[in-house]
Length: 341
Image (tube, rainbow, N blue to C red):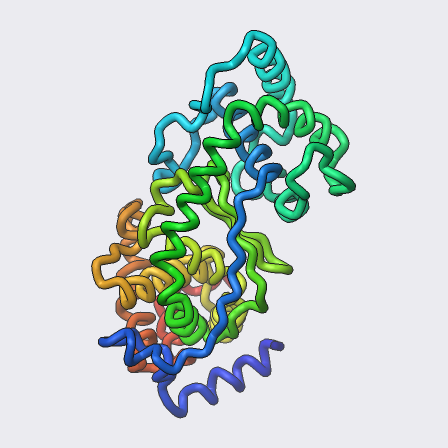
């Protein structure tokens, strides 16, 4: 949508509130007519898990301890396998890991190489060959070298943990999936992504505990991260899916900020997503404490606290059906500083 067309659309939204965005007093009443098919496919795949585990092992070897609080493990030492190394296995693993730790694949944050090959490794067959999966030849050699020891020592433990997490998460998520999707699509004014949406569960998933790649949407999250347990895991799934729904909000914020000559912070729409997903999950699970509150996202500094206050004041009424999206966006933008001339 062009900026001009978007401004016309925003003006049109001022005619009547988006009552479909309301946070329900009674979830069954609010969502009884929902027909959204969420289309999730849940996986625990060997090659993606191995790559993520190598990444984490190499970071530990290098003394890199940069995991966010939400990504910290609920099972403290995920390197405990089902049995001890043999002498030859230890030599093979330690030698491989020492060499792997000196490569670019061993370091990095959310935008690291660990995500660049995510979809390819997730789609790889669970065999010993990697087939014709298109990954860097050097990375392929490391993965094939590490695979036999990983299958013998860790993979049975990691796969079991992943599958137990999937069963637990689905028991919470599936009965309310259509309702959650309805709330999120209404709040972000965007359609639900096309099915299927793949969710890969791994013992480790970068420093943040979860991430998504787009085109197509693909969510990867850690079964071992504190921020993915219980209803926090439900919020993580909803949040990561929400990254594919932010186009309208991003465009509206950008166009309105440009028109009003305001400086738009790049993280603002992500904070809107944090707030919206947290509110949606709390509407369905009344005991839920939103992720951003549990992990003190809003308490980092005065700026973060001011964002939360602004979202409660300006975005909250929209989610409650008491103002239009256009009105909410305009109100948010009015709180931003003037752009430099």
